[in-house]
Length: 471
Image (cartoon, rainbow, N blue to C red; front, side):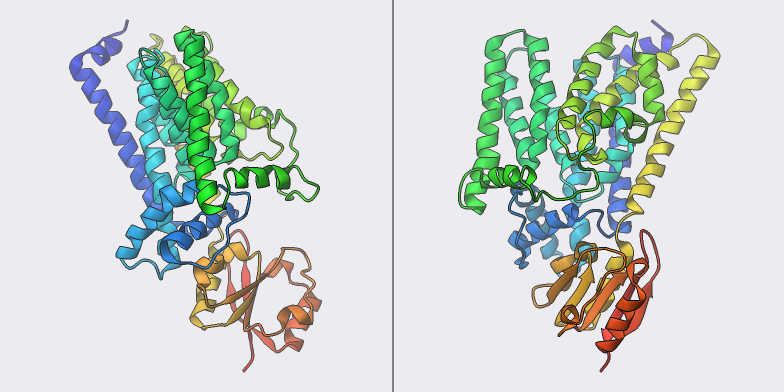
């Protein structure tokens, strides 16, 4: 054992390391809070859906959620936050409401930094490796970027890691509670039900007991019944109504045409440099020969495999794999830093510095794709006091969150050219489109209907132009 390892094993060294992990978590939380407030707009509409659903129950917003959504996450995690926001007068500011709605993800991702450290210790990692894992998780772009938004998977990831921690406790008392948390993660997003695979695998590895597996599975079923079934009963009128709708819509002939639909099952493997990152790949390779790598690597593989079972794939869907990836990275990083050869230690420090830089760069690139120009345009339109608006890709403008209950919102899907018709513009006070999608005939239709261009908002991902009906 090296002098560094001996120092970390002392009481003072352990306390210092724990304080360092807490400082990492706090720093990442502060960065996420800043990103949530600074990088406004929406990424896909799923994030807006969470906010509008929570605002429906917390603030009285007139909004109808999608029938395939279990409302557990927006009701239990986000709506209480918006009620607090209302006490501070934020209810009438859509940007403030959206920023407040990101708070559960900020807190969950930051808590998972500490949980990752504790899980590493439970799985037999050295203290340095566990601390490095917490560091790598804190500044990985998936938990850093999506942890500053309103998307729900930062919370399901926290529940998953907490369930794994409970599964590693001495005795089998924690496995049922861990299963309950997996059921809660399933209620957050149905696809997270596949997290039962690595969870049950860890229960078996740790306890080698069929009764423990039965208790863990029973806890999961109870969690699904409580958090998904009861929530659906209270919101949709019957237990598991949204789950039935999920299968009806996703497996039906008219399933949504998402950009990542029908990727091959191995897509996450072939795109590992994009979602995991080059530093992660290098450190995983370095860690492969270490015996303590086997369990977290196996759990990582099962988590990614579970996500690969679905035809719809996106990088944000594998967020639950990142804590396990970070554990393996931590093992590789510690191995490099403990090497006797100076150049190997130097390589370790370089990788240690590159990992957060890459994570922050990817995070800023991700959040730079938010619909900020559309939100700026929407706020300007709202100031005009319109009764009816026509919007291309209406979620980008914040929908009813921005315009409130008294404005009719008509929507057209993005296409080039848009193909505007006179009927779509009838009794519309203002309209907004992506400039790149407007064809000459679209502009002619707007002019013929009495509209003039009043505003042009440049920015990424697309410039927005606003038309107002002439007096």
